[in-house]
Image 1 (tube, rainbow, N blue to C red):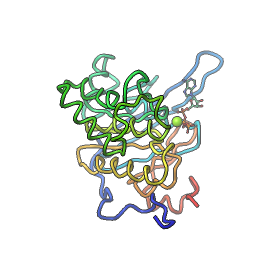
Image 2 (tube, rainbow, N blue to C red):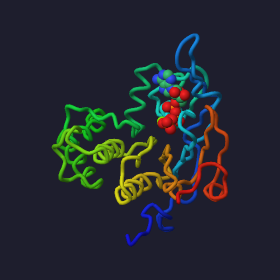
Image 3 (cartoon, rainbow, N blue to C red):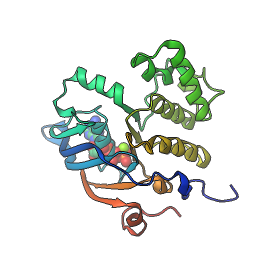
Amino acid sequence: MNGVDPFEKPAPARATGIIRMPVLRARGLVKTYGSAGETVRALDGVDIDVMSGGITMVVGPSGCGKTTLISVLAATLDVDAGTIEAFGESLHDMDPEAKTTFRRRNIGFVFQQYNLLPGLSAEENVEIPLILSGRPRRAARDAARAMLVRVGLGDKLASRPSQLSGGQQQRVAIARALVHQPRLLVCDEPTAALDGDSGRLVMNLIRELAVDPERAVVVVTHDTRLYGYADLFAIMSDGRIAKIARKEEMASSAAPEPHP
Ligand SMILES: Nc1ncnc2c1ncn2[C@@H]1O[C@H](COP(=O)(O)OP(=O)(O)OP(=O)(O)O)[C@@H](O)[C@H]1O
Ligand SMILES: [Mg+2]
C-alpha cells in the first residue's frame, strides 16, 4: 500500500451514505452486575436508536459498558430495567425461547472473544447459523465455504480454532456472523486482531451488509482507523451515552484521539 493507511477514508462510492430509519429503539436500559455489596452498574439509563442502512459505532474507554450494551441490543443479555423494540418486536417482553428464535432469525454477533466452538472446524463453525435456521446441509456447507473464501480463509476450511491464529479465528467469527445476512449485525472489536489489509477486507464486508436499507450494523471499537466507516457514533462514558455524534463532529471531538 506504499505506506498508505489501508483503513483511511473508504472510497466515496462505497460509503454507506444516508442512514434511514430506526430499526432498534432502546430506552432506559439499566444493567447491574454482582450482588449486594459489590455491584457494578454497567448500564446506567441508556437510550439509543440504531438506524438502518448504516454503521453505528460505539466508542468509549475500557469498562464504560460497550460490550454490555451491544450484548443487550443483540438479545444475548437481559437488562434489569428498560425497553427494547427491534424490527417492530418488543424484546423485553419475550420469553427466553422466543428471544432465541428472534436472535437466530435476525442477529449476527461477532464476540470480543470470538466464541468459536473448539471441537468444530472453521467451516462447521460458519455453518451453524444456517443449520439453525433450517438451511439444508449441502447448501449450508457451500455458503459457509464461500464466506470463508471471502474473508481470505479458503485454505483453512478444515482447521479447528486451536490451529488458527488470533486474526484467523476473528475472521472465522466474522464469517459466521455474516453468513446468514442478519438484519442486525453487532460486532465487538471486529478488527482487534487483524492487520491493516485484513481489517480493511473485513470492514468492507461489514459495510456491504450495512448499506442495505433494511439492515443495521453496530460496531464497538477502540480502533480510530475505523472511524471513516461509521455513519453515527454513540460515545459512551460510565454506563451512559454521553453523546451521539456524526462523523464530521468526531474529527474535532475531544473524545477518542485520532490515529497518528
Ligand atoms: N460478568 C460480569 N460480572 C461483573 N462485572 C462485569 C461483568 N461484565 C462486565 N462487568 C463490569 O461492567 C462494566 C462494563 O463492562 P463492559 O465489558 O461492558 O465494558 P467495555 O466498555 O466493553 O470494556 P472494554 O473496552 O474493556 O471491552 C465494567 O466495569 C466491568 O468490570
Ligand atoms: Mg468490551
